[in-house]
Length: 383
Image (tube, rainbow, N blue to C red):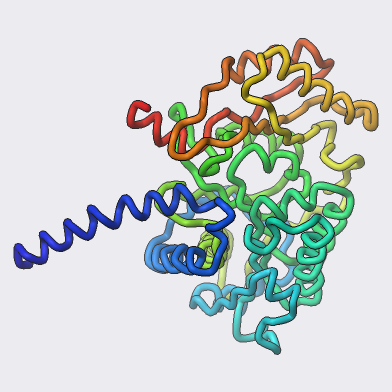
């Protein structure tokens, strides 16, 4: 390689790397949901996910309810024969018809651009359109981000996700922080987790929302609540996630990995199918005496003020359902103010947890830390 080419390559990297980092750091503002930005992100994601395996799933994990993941479907996945539909296309019926489910593994994407900025009624219409098509056997997997996952946090959402599971549709959620703790009782088949190390522990983290969740806490909460979601980890660094290619590519890698670990021969792929009673819980968010909650906390409040507000919210559930024994809290402490690091919360999460356990008559676990990915990056360079 000539010296001139090396110099040009170095110059390109010097220019490109800061641009990519800036693009990734700013991927969530409203203007980032426009076609030009999404197309660039999708192209980057497609290149990475078709050339590198980035998903990590532990050997003992397996899907729990898949009716339509047959060997022919798995073969389509392995060969990369995937058709990706956006929720907007489905809701407006602008996708290419007919949907050839024999020749393609069909993935529906509900990303921020499909639902953010819309009234709840319209969000629900878009999500319902995807669910209706899926239960007809026209969609093999649904991948959701925060806006649609949280829109399901009610009895309607519980009913819808039950329909999907009953129809054998694989439902995946990008779990990137404590704001998803409250919807864990909906039992996504796969939690796609952008992972970064914080305090030496692998953690689920959002770019700017301050509610990073250590994975060891998440794993314990899932086990306690009898929630059978598969944890699929991938690096937070350098991969645009919330775009069609990123979301579909992560599902493809996850499913192939799960199948390779659990398939005994080409003719049969076995999955556990728990009895329907295993999903039995009453008030939304309560499962086997565990309450899962997500809520916003004012980072400027004192520890006592925050604890009092949180305890008050928890008690609202206690009044409706007396079975609560353990509360898992995903607390969001506002967002990082790009490009500067947000002011630190004036107390530790261990202190807050102890304060809550004194105020409430059951065990409380604070699941999240008041930092975002951006905060973690800045701390690594001493800011």
